[in-house]
Length: 414
Picture (tube, rainbow, N blue to C red):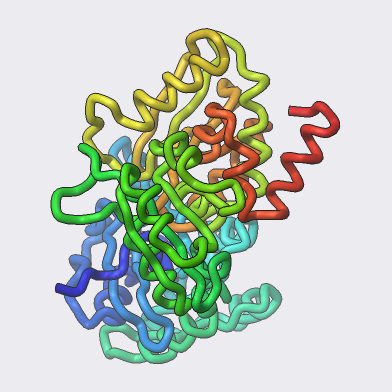
């Protein structure tokens, strides 16, 4: 059975606009399915609706149909807040407007796209009823935006919208970055250490492991997958040492002990700090662990909403390792999924998971929000490596990130 591309690796296309302008009709037209309910009554879409699809030649995308951001009332405010969160994970923003209605509301959405550096597409719908005014077209031209004219009830403009999406897609989706294939190279060998514990899905591997294997195959590299207790024997059977050993962060100490010093080693989580976020920024965030004191407040953010087990890495192991490192109990809060506080000023550090089920833009938006509020952010793998004293070795495959650490240490700055 072929597995679908994970949502986190899809181009996220957010549809925004007033109620009843045709956002759901546009989604149904481009997907050729009745994904969202269409009604003449405003406010039919009450929560964001997600639809994954293959948009050739671009590839896998995820359309997100939002509730009208001009919703009213107490319940409407909740819908608007959920819609606003979609900005955080939008790679391409689509503003849908009626030909005869344009004002500060539409300008505010375009301003938000621009503030976040989100590529934007403007769809002016219902042009069968009225043509857009010339001053609106001039305003869009001044923003260097060419609107797509549609009449979705007549099926007009759908192909133009499809082409606009292809033209607007960020380069990173046309030329997808590697997870670790660039570190190993064609013909090189990577050994992946995959503990089989209570958190491993029955009969399956976890997502970062699967994606790493696929990435190695895509870059014509070799791959050996072993459990942590088999690593030493597996390395002994190889005729020449591997280019890289990658481990689950929970097995860092054992894998470090069993991997020869002349073989580079890191973790899946650290690979994903580079793949999904900004490794340099997260390395700097990890260095602030030395500034933590007992009773400081730390936020741990998990992308997925799994049910925590007895020895959960985010809720049990990392707090335990940090407590041992700091020498006192920290005040730790947890968030899951797309929940992430707007106000982070109460925290001394934010520790994010590997973000395997979150797209890169949402992680970068969280990093930006932390930076704006002066709060450092790092991730699970970097935190574990730093707390266990193997940070420098875990950064060896990433010379630029390693240099940041070494320079800070040479100056005695944490």
